[in-house]
Length: 365
Image (tube, rainbow, N blue to C red; front, side):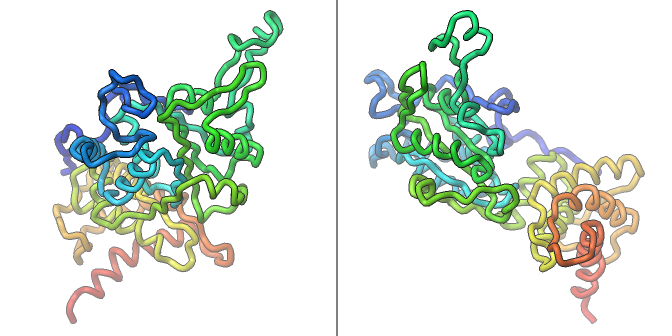
């Protein structure tokens, strides 16, 4: 029987209404941040400001960190480092493969503090005008150019509101777009033609992310870009943390199915013929698809809490997991170009190692 765990309040993920899913996401909130340039009557906590967090602020900082950590599974070190960097007024590059909680970290921080989070995807279409903004063409024809008919892009909006501009796939953006961001990061202001100078609010940050293993369609970042960013390498978490993530994201409380899904996804990362294996998202999808298949086929999921699969699991269950794995993992693994096997072949081999070879090797005699 597949069960959904009860709600766990703040540790169960984002509160309803905190995060939108539009291409440009803004996290709204009522709290304001205490900054060096804020008004004297602002008495909110000092975390994530451009000033230093002092020993007197320790209790407030620790309480804020505790609340933010409630949205995450693991990632204690990464949370500490990211909080320290943005509190110090630094812009940050998060470098790691997909599915390593980079955006989740940012969402947890900005949601807790009511900071706007504006999301843009780095690609060839992200021109400087899309990033900075443009004048409304219809109004320009009627009124000529003016500040009133300027439509701000995510960079200007983040600077004006003191938000975090999150640029995903940072190294896919065109070079002239990166140069536009360089000015904003270095000077904390940009000049917009026919609008004037836009000064960044104290809490404005640029947070970029990139996948170091993907070289297709990417741009080599210049030393000038690297010199303006603190870098945080984010790797995959351990198996226990990934099982916790899967349970939280799927709501399915089946130790056997969750352990098998995570084990299969992680095994794709250890093969020499796979350039990049599946992230924890593959395990999440595997569990969700397998749960639906179990209901459709009337197959029961074994009540076996061991992390490693024991011998003698029902064939109907292991076949169900294979079908779900082919659906969830085959599109997420990237094979070495020199091999002739298909992704489906590799997933079947991983499944055999997990359910057949592994238990047989572990069995005494």
